[in-house]
Length: 225
Image 1 (cartoon, one colour):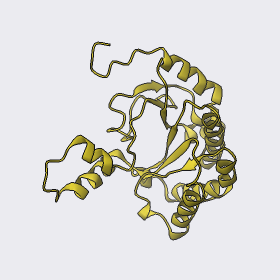
Image 2 (cartoon, one colour):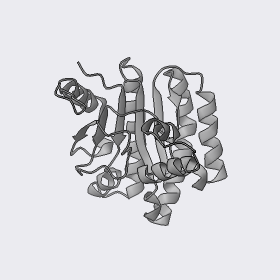
Image 3 (cartoon, one colour):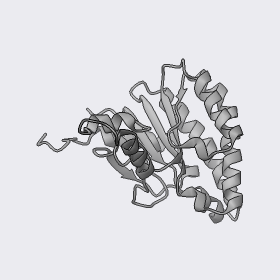
């Protein structure tokens, strides 16, 4: 039976959720942050799940309206500070991925603080993809290896990536059927699930149902069985 050791989620639909309710888009992001807590807590209590990687802010999200981006930065800073106690209570280690150099000094310090204070936790690893794009990740990895005197192998490249762990199960909420530059290398053999549910309406029970469906899939990894 398959085990969803590494689950990756594209948390899509926050803005649309708010607009459908006649609210400002930022209210959708606030609601989405609460779902992150619920899903992370659920995964931390499932011993088969080792890693949860969530697409929080992409390299393309800078194109959004300035006020929305500024709100997202403040929300992320507040979320991390508030969730530190939750991480520690649930033995969750926080490991960000992405190029955080573009963030403010204050936000970078918060990210580093939470990472350091949860470094001893040996349960679930929760990664937030922050200023992350898979193409950017691959380019940075290639540039770090370009002066190598030996031929670059798949393992060498993998070791230079922000996320060094293959994805078993990738879920996208919100109804769209695309990967949006997310964990392209790591998801080469991931099982993909696209659901119409907008992220603020996504519940732990929805994730549990997807995991049950995932366990029944025959994964062949290019072979016959």
